Amino acid sequence: MGVRIIADENYAALYCSTTMFAFGPVMTDYEEAEGFLEWLPSDARSYSEPELELKLGEYREYAEQKAALEKKRDRFLCHVSGPVWDILTSAFEEDDHESGTFNAAGFANFCPEHTPEEIAEAWELYQRYHGTP
Image (cartoon, rainbow, N blue to C red):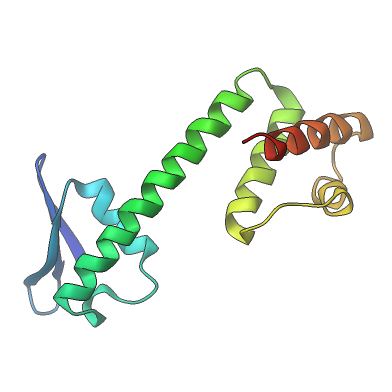
């Protein structure tokens, strides 16, 4: 039992599967509701209605920034392939989880299964990516 999502093509809402009552703001679609639930630090039922409304606004800002970052990364990676692409995409995922960036030693330790040449090329691109606005 927990928080579930009810949705159709035009909206999504949260409901408690224990009490069978809907709560919180109406969202644009299932994906937004799912992302919101994953993003919330606590059980959605622990927030008041006004708090959920504020949290949804925060989540929408976060989701917009994340989408812009993913678009920037996709443009950057469009000419990269093979092991270097694997290294960079893994490093970007790690950046997201750790909320930071690698230093050179951390980067080399992160991908020991790759050749020194692949690591060097990926490191150069990683630095270029983080150096661009």
